[in-house]
Amino acid sequence: MNMHATTHDELHAEMSDKFDTDAMAQESTLLNPRFYTTAFDELDRIDVTPVRAEWDKLIGQMKSDPNKGHFKKNADWDKVDWEGMEPKLKREFIDFLVSSCTAEFSGCVLYKEMKRRGKNPDICELFNYMARDEARHAGFINDALREAGVAVNLGFLTKAKKYTYFRPKFIYYATYLSEKIGYARYITIYRHLEANPEQRFHPIFKWFKEWCNDEFSHGEAFALLMRTDPKLTESFANKLWIRFFLTAVYSTMYVRDHARPAFHEALGVDIDWYDQEVFRKTSEIAKQVFPMELDIDHPRWMPNLKRMERAFRKIEAGAKQGGVAGQIAKFAAGAQAAWAFVALYTIPVKKSTPPVSVRLEPAY
Image: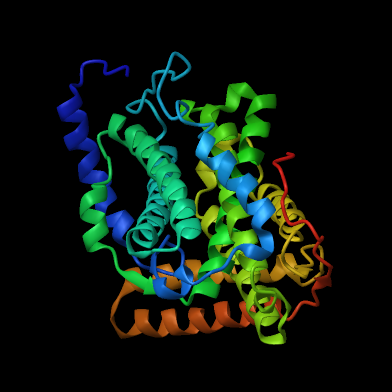
C-alpha cells in the first residue's frame, strides 16, 4: 500500500473515526444483510433421493474445491491509495465491502450451524462445503478492509448481530435468490471491467469471476433442495411467497444500489442499467426452479422502484431528524414504500415451466 508519510496505525486511527465498520455490520434495517436462524431439525429430515444423480454431481464438484487457492492476494493485487481516494467514493466503497462481508459471513454462520446440529450426511456435507466457501469470501473482503484499517470484527459480529428466524422454505427462497443474484451482480461487474479495465479502481474486482461461480453453485444446491418437495414451488400459497421474495430481493437491491452513486460512477455503470441487467440474468436463471418471473419491463416496474427508493431516502431523513416530526416523516415515508411495494407485487408475472433437469452451469 502506498502509505506516503502516514503510518498504518495513523491511517487506521484516522479512518476508524469516520468508518465504524463493526457498527455498520451490526445494523439491522430492511436494507442491511441479516443473520438467519431456522428449524434445523426440519432441514435435517430432507431426503435428496428425488434429485440424487444431480445432487451427487454437485457435491462432487464442491468436494473438488476448484477455488481452493483462489482467495489469496498475489501479483495481480495492485496497491490501493486509500488516502488519495475521493472521500465519497471511499465511504460508499467501504459500505459496499462491509455489506458484502456481512452477507457472506451470515451465510457462513447459518451453514456452519446446520453442519454442527445436523445428522443427515447429505445435508451436513453440503453445508460444510458452503460454510467453507463463505468463510473464504468474508475473510478475503475483510483483508481488503484491513488494508484500509477498518476490518470488521467477525468474531464479535457473531455474538452482537441480531438473528432473524425464517422457516426453512423461506431460507430456501431467500438464500437461493441471494446466491443467484450475487452471481449475476459479480459477473456483470466483472464483464464490464474486463471490457473497461481503466475503471477498475480496486483489485478485488479481478477475483469476481471465480468468486461468482461459488455463488452460482450454492444457488444450485438450494434449487435441488427445493426440488425434493414439489409443494415448495407448486402450491398456490408458496407461489405467492416466491413472488414476494422476488419482489423484495429485487427492490431491496435497487434501493441499496442507488444509495451508492459515487461507487457506480467510478465503475462507469448507470445504476438503472446495471440493476435491470442483474434482474434479467437472475430471472433467466431462476426459471430453473421457480414457475414464474417478474415482468421487469412492465410500465409499472421502474416508476415504483423509483418511488420506493425516494421513500427510503425520506425514512433515512426522518430518522436523522428525530423527535415527533421525524417519526411522522418516517411513518409517512414507510406508507409510501409499502404502497410502492404493493404496486410492484401486483404486476402480472410471466409464468413458466421449470425444466425436468434443474442443474445449470455459469454461462455469462
